[in-house]
Image (cartoon, rainbow, N blue to C red; front, side, top):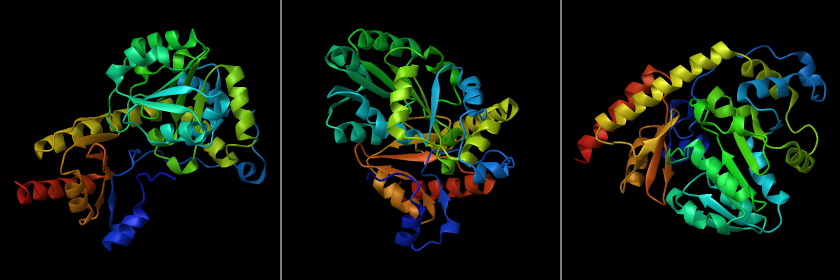
Length: 330
């Protein structure tokens, strides 16, 4: 399996720092969220049922008529490649590595592309996979551009697959409202925006026939009863969503400013993370980790991704460490 951010236990062992003493900025998940609603006892004791209101709440939140809840968008990432015969799949890279990994594992040919290479390559692809906004670069592609690519792909029986895991703070740029449409598949993550990655919930938005095939791959009861009950409540909480969106947008801008003020201007980001593209990324990662601050290191190209601190103590701690690094390596 590929490695991901959030491996706090491994970092604690490596650096000899107790888990409780870390500032974990490695995941790109909202570090705060809602006071959790009470979960009905039946959600724990009965098998999940589809007519519990989750799909209705999700359709309202995403503005989409046709969707399928899944056990985290990762479940869909692994299953979708099984729904196509051998295909040539373009992946706008670098991006979340599980996408290319899943298509390659199922025997498809995968071609890594920059966004400015897609136009020329598109007519030789069966599937185009885009993470929008991109993780880890933060690049966001315009809806009109993506829909034009979709039109060219679907005319030949192809797919445009868009992973919108980090789109919740900018819903005006989402393609959710363009579904269902043949050949258009949109993935949404619940846990990142709502700060609840541990419940493992995501949604696939696509035409009903494709969702039925995907559901058959995943099997019954893919999402637990407690996850369904909790998500149903939060997806209907419009006031809470507004507060969360404002808080994350504010803190995303604050993180961008802080990095710039410390001589570490980001190369891109979203409300949930900022990316540094630096030759000394590994050294900075190790310097911060030795002080109990965990970031996400990427080797190709050398870069670091910073998530948001959860509180003022975390912000002060990060600022102090970055200032010290600038002094030690000036």
